Image (cartoon, rainbow, N blue to C red; front, side, top):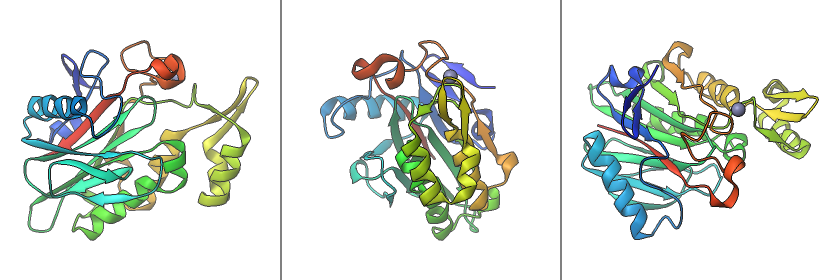
Length: 243
Ligand SMILES: [Zn+2]
């Protein structure tokens, strides 16, 4: 399913097209804390060099719906999705449970375009993943050719939410969002994976080009930091894509 190169995990779906990409495990750098701090610069540098990229760009992820194009290295401001066409520039997301979704594709001239979304529940109900695909399409990508990977994150097995989350989702995504929620005897569970796959498909991504690593950070052992499991002590891992 995934190849293991120490603390960097990669997806064959993206490796097959030679994407420089991957996501870190708990053994990699810790990406927690202030996104403008020196620790983040050091972690991003180690990550992008390990994947064969030159530099990285990252954001202050605020659980919103803002999608930004980046052309320069470094801190890009507030956003929950970044994309780029700048050779050597990786876009880097940080997480401890929220799905990070890596997307890569081609433009008509054969050049590449790539991005990531940080699909927390708040960003998901604001359409962050659809917004990323639409922005990349406006940037020249053929959506039918895009490849997307859902990195390890909170699975439908464990991601329990309050009913107000469901109400917010129904209000912003429409009645079809009911399918993303499951009532069990223990409570109400939100399937963030299904919600984001639906957004990608609606924006034109082919289902066979979406790969879900299908690893739950909450119940899947201590391979990845989990905010739900570890609380405020939780570290953060990161994911990157570029070319
Ligand atoms: Zn789980």
